[in-house]
Length: 120
Image (cartoon, rainbow, N blue to C red; front, side, top):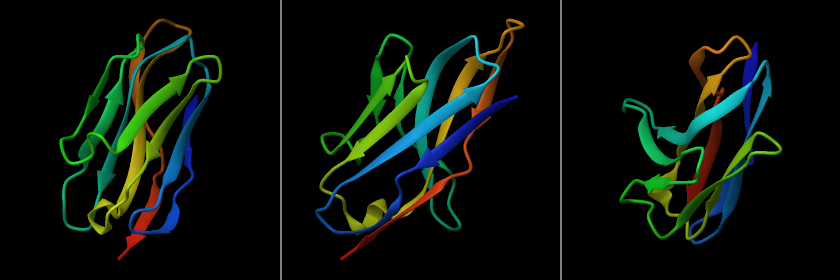
């Protein structure tokens, strides 16, 4: 079984910073792409940033220049450094990953989410 666990969310004032982590564990052979998504009540989950196994990154226009996605393959962990936070960044942040298990099959996994609240 594979688990993704997010951490690092919390309450911060506008202009502040937070660093989210997404730790993976379980029956993992390799991790392909990983990503951060966020969701607010009544809205669809939206992509914030993604990173491939060779560190190609992609960002939503709304966070480009403020957020940085990275991964530590040795630790099977992904990060999201969020700077210059705005109240509109308030959401539940989820990580996901496409993981190849030891049997050679690819599956998409999601974490449970972590709340980020930015006060004005």
